[in-house]
Image (cartoon, rainbow, N blue to C red; front, side, top):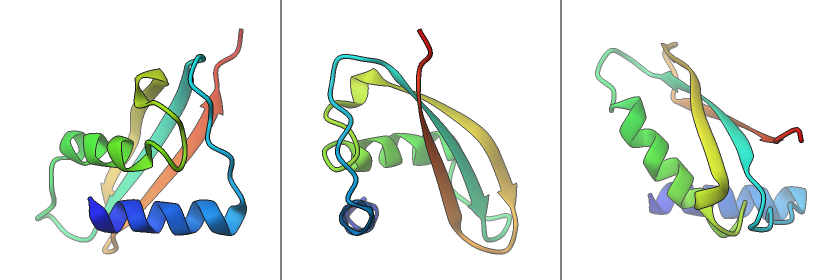
Length: 88
């Protein structure tokens, strides 16, 4: 998780992202690409990723509504996260 957290902090700083304040739900659409058939459980990866993003990306993960939209074997390790505000 430390690697993920450091990478997230660097990315947030690079793009000057302001953390999403607590108080309103938001959607997280997450796509995992795995290197080969020996890969961790995407559901366990989801929890680690959500925890690593708390702080730099959003104030509190209880407002996040995550969904794994894709998990596939592509020959590379890659994670895509799309954050979307909820429509009222």
